[in-house]
Image: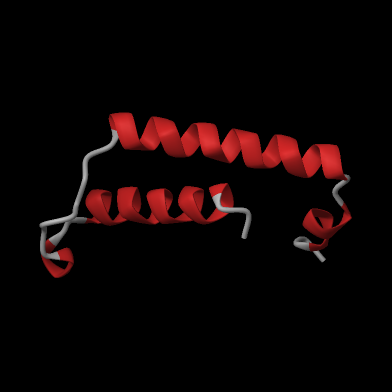
Length: 64
């Protein structure tokens, strides 16, 4: 039931949500480090948390 609220959003609210996540994605790109060339199995908990955050924001910025 907790996820049902996302299905009931009006069109304006969806656009606002998308704009917020696109802004966050841009901030992530500028502020957070890139892990493109690193071995993901050797990362610490904080690095894994950052990667998870970036993935979550990116997926929401794409409108999924």
